[in-house]
Length: 193
Image 1 (cartoon, rainbow, N blue to C red):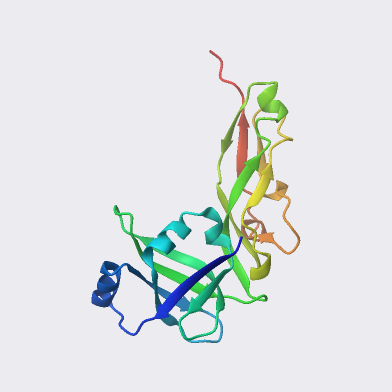
Image 2 (image 1 turned 120 degrees about the vertical axis):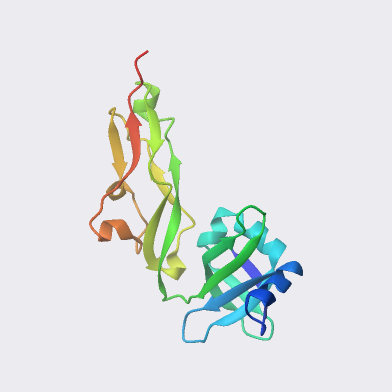
Protein backbone atom coordinates (compact mmCIF):
# COMPACT_ATOMS: atom_id res chain seq x y z
CA UNK A 1 0.00 0.00 0.00
CA UNK A 2 1.38 3.42 -0.86
CA UNK A 3 0.72 6.59 1.08
CA UNK A 4 1.47 10.20 0.26
CA UNK A 5 1.22 13.21 2.56
CA UNK A 6 1.76 16.91 1.96
CA UNK A 7 3.47 19.25 4.39
CA UNK A 8 4.51 22.87 4.77
CA UNK A 9 7.78 23.88 6.45
CA UNK A 10 7.21 25.96 9.58
CA UNK A 11 9.37 28.61 11.21
CA UNK A 12 7.38 29.20 14.37
CA UNK A 13 8.11 26.56 17.00
CA UNK A 14 7.28 26.14 20.64
CA UNK A 15 4.17 25.53 22.71
CA UNK A 16 2.28 28.68 21.72
CA UNK A 17 2.99 28.26 18.01
CA UNK A 18 1.94 24.59 18.15
CA UNK A 19 -1.34 25.51 19.84
CA UNK A 20 -2.09 28.12 17.17
CA UNK A 21 -1.40 25.58 14.43
CA UNK A 22 -3.66 22.98 16.03
CA UNK A 23 -6.42 25.57 16.42
CA UNK A 24 -6.13 26.24 12.65
CA UNK A 25 -6.49 22.51 11.82
CA UNK A 26 -2.77 21.94 11.30
CA UNK A 27 -0.63 19.26 12.93
CA UNK A 28 2.95 20.05 14.01
CA UNK A 29 5.50 17.42 13.01
CA UNK A 30 9.24 16.92 12.73
CA UNK A 31 11.14 15.18 9.92
CA UNK A 32 14.57 13.87 10.89
CA UNK A 33 17.20 11.35 9.84
CA UNK A 34 19.63 10.88 7.00
CA UNK A 35 22.35 13.42 6.30
CA UNK A 36 19.95 16.38 6.37
CA UNK A 37 19.13 18.59 9.36
CA UNK A 38 15.73 18.03 11.02
CA UNK A 39 12.89 20.07 9.53
CA UNK A 40 9.82 21.27 11.43
CA UNK A 41 6.67 20.95 9.28
CA UNK A 42 2.90 21.14 9.60
CA UNK A 43 0.46 18.62 8.17
CA UNK A 44 -3.30 18.67 7.65
CA UNK A 45 -4.68 17.30 10.93
CA UNK A 46 -7.80 15.57 9.62
CA UNK A 47 -6.08 13.72 6.78
CA UNK A 48 -3.31 12.55 9.14
CA UNK A 49 -5.82 11.55 11.84
CA UNK A 50 -7.67 9.26 9.42
CA UNK A 51 -4.44 7.93 7.88
CA UNK A 52 -3.20 7.01 11.38
CA UNK A 53 -6.33 4.89 11.90
CA UNK A 54 -5.09 2.50 9.18
CA UNK A 55 -2.82 -0.25 10.49
CA UNK A 56 -0.73 -0.30 7.30
CA UNK A 57 0.13 3.41 7.61
CA UNK A 58 2.36 2.74 10.66
CA UNK A 59 4.63 0.31 8.79
CA UNK A 60 4.55 1.74 5.25
CA UNK A 61 7.07 3.85 3.41
CA UNK A 62 5.32 7.20 2.99
CA UNK A 63 6.09 9.77 0.31
CA UNK A 64 6.36 13.16 2.00
CA UNK A 65 5.96 16.25 -0.19
CA UNK A 66 7.23 19.32 1.65
CA UNK A 67 6.25 22.52 -0.15
CA UNK A 68 9.26 23.85 -2.05
CA UNK A 69 11.43 20.73 -1.56
CA UNK A 70 11.93 17.37 -3.23
CA UNK A 71 9.76 14.43 -2.15
CA UNK A 72 11.24 12.13 0.52
CA UNK A 73 10.51 8.64 1.82
CA UNK A 74 9.62 8.62 5.53
CA UNK A 75 8.36 6.28 8.25
CA UNK A 76 6.09 7.20 11.16
CA UNK A 77 8.24 6.82 14.28
CA UNK A 78 6.15 8.39 17.05
CA UNK A 79 2.66 9.82 17.46
CA UNK A 80 1.37 11.83 20.42
CA UNK A 81 -2.40 11.85 21.01
CA UNK A 82 -4.51 14.05 23.26
CA UNK A 83 -5.47 12.10 26.42
CA UNK A 84 -9.24 12.21 25.79
CA UNK A 85 -10.02 14.22 22.64
CA UNK A 86 -9.81 12.77 19.14
CA UNK A 87 -6.79 14.91 18.45
CA UNK A 88 -3.26 14.16 17.29
CA UNK A 89 -0.77 16.49 18.99
CA UNK A 90 2.51 15.73 17.22
CA UNK A 91 4.07 13.28 14.74
CA UNK A 92 7.73 12.27 14.30
CA UNK A 93 8.74 11.16 10.80
CA UNK A 94 12.09 9.53 9.98
CA UNK A 95 13.72 9.92 6.57
CA UNK A 96 14.73 6.60 5.05
CA UNK A 97 16.15 5.31 1.78
CA UNK A 98 16.36 1.84 0.24
CA UNK A 99 19.43 0.93 2.32
CA UNK A 100 18.36 2.30 5.72
CA UNK A 101 18.16 -0.46 8.33
CA UNK A 102 15.24 0.12 10.68
CA UNK A 103 13.79 -1.51 13.79
CA UNK A 104 10.03 -1.21 13.96
CA UNK A 105 7.09 -2.87 15.70
CA UNK A 106 4.93 -4.78 13.23
CA UNK A 107 1.49 -6.25 14.02
CA UNK A 108 0.88 -10.01 14.08
CA UNK A 109 -2.02 -11.45 12.07
CA UNK A 110 -3.18 -14.89 13.18
CA UNK A 111 -4.65 -17.29 10.60
CA UNK A 112 -6.16 -20.81 10.69
CA UNK A 113 -6.87 -20.74 14.43
CA UNK A 114 -10.39 -22.14 13.99
CA UNK A 115 -9.09 -24.85 11.65
CA UNK A 116 -6.43 -26.20 14.04
CA UNK A 117 -7.02 -29.71 15.39
CA UNK A 118 -6.71 -28.58 19.00
CA UNK A 119 -9.68 -26.23 18.57
CA UNK A 120 -11.84 -28.30 16.20
CA UNK A 121 -11.50 -31.74 17.73
CA UNK A 122 -10.48 -31.15 21.33
CA UNK A 123 -12.41 -27.95 22.13
CA UNK A 124 -9.35 -25.93 23.08
CA UNK A 125 -9.17 -22.16 23.14
CA UNK A 126 -6.47 -19.99 21.67
CA UNK A 127 -5.13 -17.08 23.68
CA UNK A 128 -2.71 -14.56 22.23
CA UNK A 129 0.18 -13.29 24.30
CA UNK A 130 1.75 -10.86 21.81
CA UNK A 131 0.00 -8.73 19.19
CA UNK A 132 3.12 -7.17 17.66
CA UNK A 133 6.82 -7.90 17.33
CA UNK A 134 9.92 -5.77 16.84
CA UNK A 135 11.69 -6.57 13.56
CA UNK A 136 14.91 -5.39 11.93
CA UNK A 137 15.28 -5.03 8.16
CA UNK A 138 16.07 -2.57 5.39
CA UNK A 139 13.26 -0.05 4.91
CA UNK A 140 12.38 -1.32 1.43
CA UNK A 141 11.55 -4.82 2.81
CA UNK A 142 9.40 -3.63 5.70
CA UNK A 143 6.28 -5.84 5.83
CA UNK A 144 2.82 -4.47 6.56
CA UNK A 145 2.29 -7.30 9.08
CA UNK A 146 3.65 -10.71 10.04
CA UNK A 147 1.40 -13.75 9.53
CA UNK A 148 1.34 -16.48 12.20
CA UNK A 149 -0.19 -19.75 10.99
CA UNK A 150 -1.94 -21.64 13.82
CA UNK A 151 -3.01 -24.67 11.74
CA UNK A 152 -0.41 -26.94 13.40
CA UNK A 153 -1.68 -26.39 16.95
CA UNK A 154 -2.98 -29.81 17.90
CA UNK A 155 -1.82 -30.72 21.42
CA UNK A 156 -3.41 -29.07 24.43
CA UNK A 157 -1.38 -26.67 26.55
CA UNK A 158 1.15 -25.97 23.81
CA UNK A 159 2.48 -22.66 22.56
CA UNK A 160 3.71 -21.01 19.39
CA UNK A 161 7.00 -19.17 19.94
CA UNK A 162 8.82 -16.44 18.04
CA UNK A 163 11.16 -19.06 16.55
CA UNK A 164 8.12 -20.74 14.92
CA UNK A 165 7.30 -17.69 12.76
CA UNK A 166 8.28 -17.97 9.12
CA UNK A 167 9.66 -14.60 8.04
CA UNK A 168 10.52 -13.36 4.55
CA UNK A 169 14.21 -13.24 3.67
CA UNK A 170 16.11 -10.25 5.07
CA UNK A 171 13.85 -9.76 8.09
CA UNK A 172 14.88 -10.75 11.60
CA UNK A 173 13.13 -10.63 14.95
CA UNK A 174 14.94 -8.41 17.45
CA UNK A 175 13.92 -10.59 20.44
CA UNK A 176 15.38 -13.71 18.81
CA UNK A 177 18.62 -11.86 18.06
CA UNK A 178 18.76 -10.99 21.78
CA UNK A 179 18.25 -14.68 22.71
CA UNK A 180 14.63 -14.39 23.86
CA UNK A 181 12.25 -16.92 22.29
CA UNK A 182 8.98 -15.59 23.70
CA UNK A 183 5.63 -17.34 23.44
CA UNK A 184 3.10 -15.71 21.10
CA UNK A 185 0.01 -17.95 21.32
CA UNK A 186 -1.17 -20.61 23.77
CA UNK A 187 -3.62 -23.44 23.09
CA UNK A 188 -5.45 -24.11 26.35
CA UNK A 189 -7.59 -27.13 27.13
CA UNK A 190 -11.34 -26.87 27.57
CA UNK A 191 -12.37 -26.17 31.17
CA UNK A 192 -14.17 -28.98 32.98
CA UNK A 193 -17.71 -28.14 33.99
